[in-house]
Structures are given as structure tokens and as C-alpha cells.
Length: 377
View: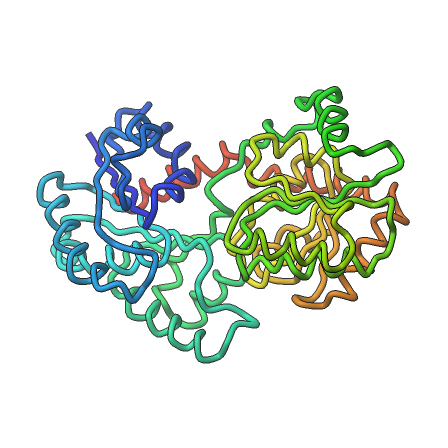
């Protein structure tokens, strides 16, 4: 029996790997999961053969990361003798690779790092970029195979020699359930219902933003651009929660847009909300490969996104509109363009769904199967 351990800093990030786990377990693999307090999650206990807790924090300066976690990781590996360890997210990726380097040098385990977006990137702070690039170069020495999810990171990994070029693998994400966002599977009655919930009439175009209310998502830019648009019949909805939630509500009120901007919190009906919209908006300064953009394109809804890695990969073929990070005027103009060119916007969305075939869950699972087989050969 082949044995795989998937490691992320927090349980939520393990969700990206659940389809891969399910597929391998069906083939007779033992697939375990490791994350902070993962044993408290019934969902993950069911999704893996076994789960392991590890004491670390998303804060890279937390002393537990290097004082406690390595011993716990090494103890688990001593018990289970995994063939492969696939690690993702910054703290987990660095600490796990550091902890297992002696074992991998002895040929006892292969370590794969899935980078969901390096913490150094074009447009980032030069000082911050230098620090994270140095850390990735160091940890690259403890890595057997590196997976990147966008072309900027692929180029960077090879250019900076993080790992041998033939061990850099471009795999576009961890897979998306394309059919969940298939317009044919989203009842029009549900679309009407959600628009009624928001108090919209057919004359009220809706824009949607899906994501956590955190600084790098830049929700303030969207609210300011929307207010600058000055079209009272147009509405904007945010689906998500986070530390900036109340501050953004206050901003919308201060700008006089409180009756047009809807703060929905966490939602389970994202496909319906997307189909109820004329476009989705993502104003982030940093992404790896944004799921909300992929989901929107699957639903045949065009996207207004910032010209950053990941988003650029998804929209560069005319599946949406790209604007510069922080350019509120350009964001306002992109919103206006969608409103003034409805047929062209619909064509963008349809083109986007065709483009998403390469990101389908089945294709990604197959690529991971091939990667694991190559690593074990």
C-alpha cells in the first residue's frame, strides 16, 4: 500500500486536496492529513484515513513553528513511514521540509511542495520579496518536486533556481468542480429568488465580489470605484467575511452607497449569486490562482480582475478585463464597460467557460497521479 501525507497549516487549506485524497484512497492508497487542530474537524476525519494535529501558527514568527512542530512531524513520520509527503501553505511548507530533510536525504520519503502562490511576486515590496525569495531558495534544497499553479511562479522558480528546472511542475490549481458552476445546472428560479432577496428588479444590474475581507483583497478599491460610477440603478454584492467587514460597511455608508452595496457574509450559494450577476470583481494585490475567478468563468460570467499572476493567466485570453492594482479610475471604467457592452460581456463569459476545461477537477487529479508516480519511480 502506498502512503501519502498531505500537510497544510490550517484544516481549511486541506480542502483543496480532498478530491485528490478521495481518488487515491479509492485506488487503495492510505492518505492522511496533517494541520493545526485538524482532529476537531469531522469533515477531515472522514476525508482521510487518519489525521494528525501539529502545533504551529500562520504567524511565521510564532516560536512553536520551529520549537515544537518539527518534533511532532518527525514523530509521525517515524510511526507511519510515508512514501510521499505533499505540503502546501507557507508555514507548513517551510517547517515540514526543514523537519524531513534528513529522512529525504536517506531516501526514506519524497517531499513535494505545492506552492499556491509564492510570497515574493511582481509588484511586491522589494524588501519583503528578498526575504521570501531567500527562504524559498533555502527550502528548495529540502524539496524533491515543486508544483506551481501559475506561470509567473513557474518562471520565477526556474529563473531563481529554487529547484532543478526538470523538477518544477506547472499544475493549474488543485481542481475545480466545473459542473457545479455549469449554467445548465443552476435553476433560473434560484437566480430570480436571490435577486428578489436583494430587492433587485430586472433593471438593476448586479456585480459580485467573492472573497475574504482582508487587506490584500482590496475591497475598498471596489467600493470606491463603485461609488465613483455614480449609477444608482446598479448594485454590488460582497460574499465573504473577514477583519475588514465592518470597516467596509462603514465606507459604503460614508460614500452614500449603502442602499446599493450588499454585504452578504459567508454564502453557500455562490454559483447562484454569480449567475445573478453581470460580472464578478477581484481587486487583489496578490493571488496564486484565484478560485472565484475560475468559478465565475465556469458560470459564464465575465470577470474584472487586477493584472497580477494567476488572475492574468485566467483572463489574458479575453475572458474578462484586467486593470492595474489600486487604479480605482480604471476599475470604474471597467465596470462601466460591462454595463455598456452587455453582449460582448456575455461572449467573454462563454469564452471563459471553454477556457476552464484545462482546470477541471478530473484533469488536475490525473496530473497529480502522474506526478506522484514520477516521484516514486
